[in-house]
Length: 105
Ligand SMILES: [Zn+2]
Image 1 (cartoon, rainbow, N blue to C red):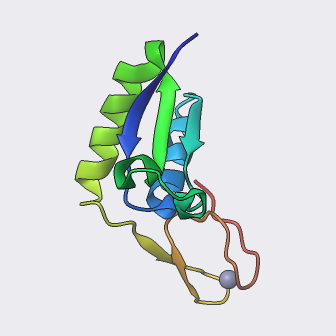
Image 2 (cartoon, rainbow, N blue to C red):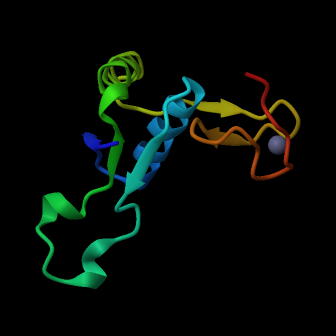
């Protein structure tokens, strides 16, 4: 089984968000480089950015999901307001960091 690089992102938050989206669609993805690689020194900048890798056979479908997600959100992650404590939460998280309220769907 071989992996193929699907996407290189700007930051770990974006990559984690997309990772969750793929998992929800039943696609196993692997996240690489979410920890700063600068500690390792001489890695080219491009190679130190967070990346998403998927199985080659899932690549086409994953790519569709990704393109759709990126075009509908304009690259910006939506925030939501916790109905319980009214805290603003980043769209990546399904749970309120403040009171622990979990969002349905
Ligand atoms: Zn809350």
